[in-house]
Image (tube, rainbow, N blue to C red; front, top):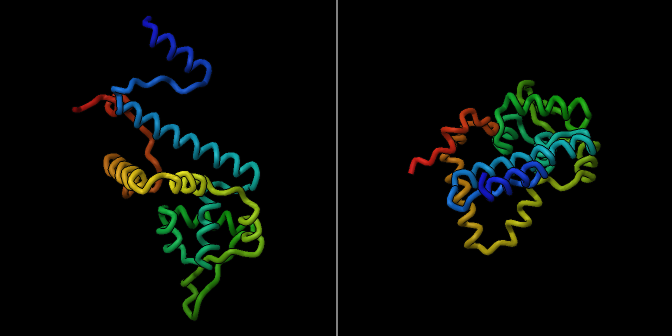
Length: 182
């Protein structure tokens, strides 16, 4: 076993991130995506433990409060989820009395989701959403760095073909993804 392999094995056993060779950008990208997914998962778990809501629920509640109410379709578009997924989230928020559905006009099928006072108070007392922390750090970058990062993320989304996917896909065949095709 080479020195580098031994060091990486020890780092992995200690829970530290493995050393990824600079000449393996494919592994660096995969590792970065996994670390982002892990950060989102940890944030959502902490939020659920502290506030009793998940990150997607908090995001939906936040958008409803900011906009003063939205239809399910509008809310789904704003949080990049399918309307059926948002219906489930709204149902859970409604069961906790954080939002309510208001019927508009004579057509009882037209419904708007609005926050309750309890929902607004819970949102005021919630920790900042993970994306808010990201935006603060992002705002500290030079404009040129912001544009480069935005373009890189957009390219990554395009490469992963996730424009139509509502949630991050599970990587099924890592070997195919890790093989450089250059």
